[in-house]
Image 1: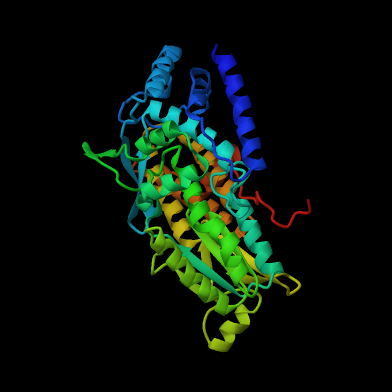
Image 2: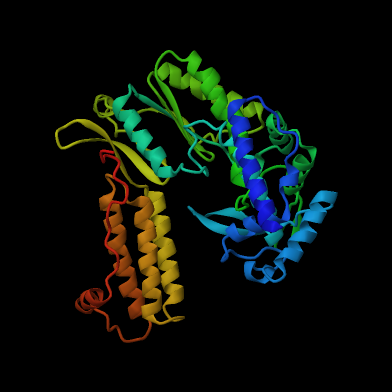
Length: 442
């Protein structure tokens, strides 16, 4: 029965995408019934099995016992509209500069239902989202956004950048406004009620229940999609339909989740766009961070402008990289990229903290494998064109930290660089290499 339900649901989700694409004003009246046992069971098996547990203290493996029976009870609650999501468990992770980022860890049944809702909404909204939105979307990623930035600045008449930061976006999204945006496409009151309950489920912080009147919990499965829907209407569609038609020169928006920049030809247009952005976000009860929002010159003439004005050429950080004006070996302009200093320091600090904690807990051969995996993960993200020097620097730092903490295991400092080199011959760590060549001919 579950497999039959699943197949029917997947076919219907495909038809939802077809309807959404065929008619951009089509409104969907009946969606919540897709959250059946077969579909939710498939959602359950798509979850990350090693994620931390929420306030229910139930792990993925524990829930698997009698999973069909549990999901049957869950679906019955959904049909009767008696299901109420549990509050998430609030945790804090380092953000850099002594700041922390709050995350919400959902209970297992919350995760299952959220995943189901996200798949339903995704089948509709993915055809609506615009191409310059890269965050948390299938077949879209940060490296594509980075490539577009380099290509556009190098090939288009870009002379200015509007850099904007939405102040506490995920904590300040107004629920009523978000639900109003959802109602443009969704007319299923049952699904909207369920989404509203997730938004208002609250969180537990140090054993205290905190109600949420606004915001979407970072860390939840549903939050990135809801954020994309909100910003699709507030920013993307507005920029594409209105702003582009009111600028005289070239202008382009690149957005990844709540981070975005505008590439603009003229200073006049850039200033007007920034003012319009401030008014636009204020209309939807959001604010651009005054210290992290600016207009500055950038592009093929920026180095000349900097020399003329007797200042350093402007740079900007986006998606963990510092972008700067550079030249090719033949002297042509290009956009250079390197790991931002802020991100490099944060990664170095995390690695040092981890090595300090793990060195005496497990054998060296065991944590050495994990260190290799961490390095591969670092290269996988930061190993982009122009950034070899930064990832090589991180590799060298990892070797120094590993040697330091191997010597801290006892009073006797036995690991010198000669022995370290021999150890690396026997147990090599992955060497830095470029994983994303933005200039490869395809």
